[in-house]
Length: 98
Image (cartoon, rainbow, N blue to C red):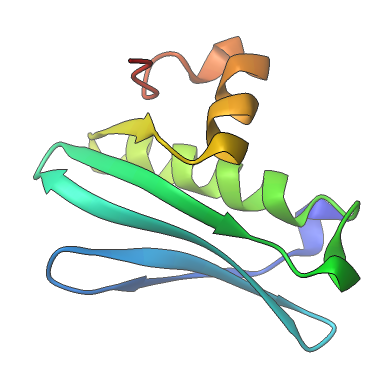
């Protein structure tokens, strides 16, 4: 299911969010930009209707791929992103654990 999830990035001056809309429900992963080379993921919200469908994981993977492409690192303050990053050792190149 996660491969079919379309994710958009919405940026503001100091941060932004990754948004996935699935079956009319919106899930998001919010971030703030600590520096040009560092973002802090501080919030992930997946509505109950989408739980268990891989939407949160798709958002996390998208953030990791975006960081790799953009040349920045991620600090996972959000408990969900932190748990995902600990499960995926292959993300260690862009995820900075505290």
